[in-house]
Image (cartoon, rainbow, N blue to C red; front, side, top):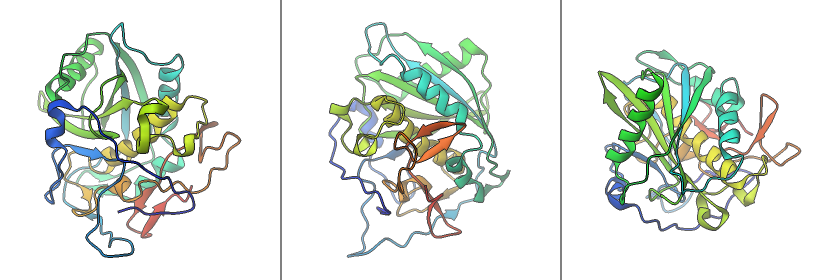
Length: 290
């Protein structure tokens, strides 16, 4: 499923202690209830060449605009580096109107067309201890605590990013899914915290860190992947290729050429980032040709 352009990242297999969450990791042709972002992408059954990508519409809604929230699950004894939250929050503030978010606007749902509009609704730090095993239930309970504490309103156009501190992993670079709360979907992504020693194929390509923060720049790359898929496939019934995944899966490790002063490939609201491209079914290529 790898679509290589001018910057190719050598990826290595990662082995994480995932607990019960890993029981969801085996994808099926019917589209899994939790969508994982693996460091090696998905295998293709073709003997050679690129897979025949065919992202199709499956009838569900998209996120026509979004409000995003960052939930940092950081117990008192858990490490995140000094500027991590600041850089993450900055990216979520800059995403709307950017070239990478704009790549999603060719897609539509039963509720309308995606617009290049996203705003950052705020952050919340949860200091509750991690349980001995971090399950999907524990993750969703943490998201519900943040929603209740802040009076946030879930909707089809709302995104929640649950950010771990150093330690917990989920058997993948990141994933997105949803659950229902009081009749509304809670659409969320889980983003692990990676150090340079832990990241492997999930890390910022070639260690490029436009914000001088490897963990934050790695998280942003994984967040951007999940955000594009949450926008175009929020309830896992809108846009995807049953064989090759969602629009970010198809372009995993397609970065184009870094062009900013700090070797980023995206300039958004004056800030530099390194993110992967997304699949354009219309152009049959990875876009926006960063």
